[in-house]
Image (tube, rainbow, N blue to C red; front, top):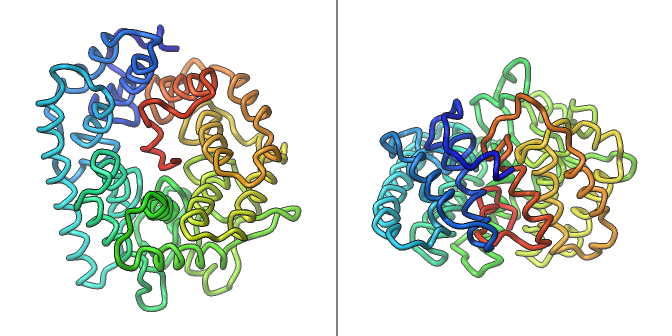
Length: 382
């Protein structure tokens, strides 16, 4: 996989995209170089390709696009000559993050509902927070993002503070009255994972544990049962909230982005941060039931990190490291799913849905170790 991606080339996505562009593809070569499997030239070439256009620090800049995306990719590449670029990128990321925080607090003051892109992992402040915490674990900017996420969880007019009127992109028609999004990529489980990971690491701001509790209480209210095992709907509409029940007939694909595995991982992290053994058991039951259900596993039809076998593999392996009963998780089955994933002629080369992300998951499987460069921090798995 790495050999196929050695030479930088146009990939049909902005080069400064972590999702599908050169910045994300560089992560595969950086991980290989950091573990001694390759030299640094391929990584350098892809990082250079990622800077072919002026890097964005505007409204579109986020963990997966622009200066923050390149800063995330460059962080573990401790090579001579990268220092000045990293310093400039740090300044850009700090400016982007503070601008987004200011806009979010202005929105809060108006009493408006947030857009998903204000707070989520892919486009919002949770993703920016994940990077600045990785870069400066005890820094003030990470604390400011955490304080904002605490404010986000405060109820507003009887609805969760993260209730949004913006597009869920998960339904044929936009739900009237907005929705509560439960996903890891675009929903409240991204903030939950970030709040929990930082708390577990000892970085706690005022109200952080209470915010974790509010999100967990919401997930408890929407916990469903499938053959005796828990699962959660991808989103909750106003009609469902008023009816007190989900219209989603059962668990969908077991993906990182929206599925049971990542929602369970976020709750496992919350349980570890708060010492909630019962929640740890619930999360393990949810994941084990999901992985033992052939009907759910057959819903995965691609290799990618976002909603394919690579994302499932990375999520399950992070989960297993903290499980009460890791031997109950069918880890071999998940590894076989990863290895047996069929290739497709139209598979993109990028990180989130393409070959580079799949290659990184294969690298983790081969080494039986956590990523040396912590590239999976952009998935908020550990």
